[in-house]
Length: 339
Image (cartoon, rainbow, N blue to C red; front, side, top):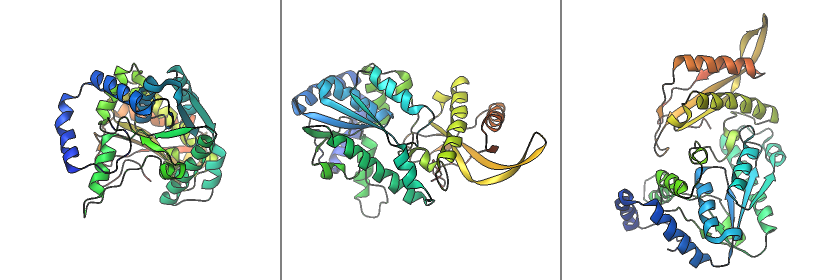
């Protein structure tokens, strides 16, 4: 099995993958991939950027089974994560026996985002800062020869489609710019798997259902769920509102029944009343969708009583929020994230 990056797949390879999907066996995949990684990597050292998501986590555990301590993982706290997420994710990774370097870099990200309101500019700043932080930490490691990525088959398929004339699909890039800059070979142990297959491999590796069932989360984090300027105060407001919402979904048994959920902090204020006095504070939007591949998404019809209770809990529990809305937009024409 050749895990070195070999560019855009051929049409024949794409068609072959479609045929093989129904016969996928996670136990066979794990045993064959671990053997191939042991042979291909030998005693070489590998660095992997963890995101807390399913793909990078399964990649890390698969690689760890093959090469053990020669895998070095870097987990960057951008300051744009959910409340307590850094501590929780670091704890879960160490519980898996992974060699993880945690980096607190929130001040850098939030400082560089100050005054920026354009969504694309925010994304570029966050991506650039991640590369800089990751590169700085990786350079402290010695004799690293490989960069591991959590690339999965839909990423590859999109890259293939992007090279067809007239097809406007994004080209895949997991850690843009790092391979050339760091002169590393690429290893992508999940590059021919669909998301459901990745989760099956994770279960075969003994990973917890909580980790494997995590909702997709945007790479730029809450930086694109705070609409408009990103400030420490606005991130804190969104973290509190988001935690109330996600905790409520879990308590109600709804979290595992939906594909993705989160809260958006809107760049508008509205009039409200608190203790008989006028307020003029922030509005948030709850977003819940079901999807298979994120290319399209449908609205989830959550129980009205549940939404009303969550709305009240957020407005009573989060200082600075006095209005809660529910996004009922499908994709297309809307996107899942607001920015």
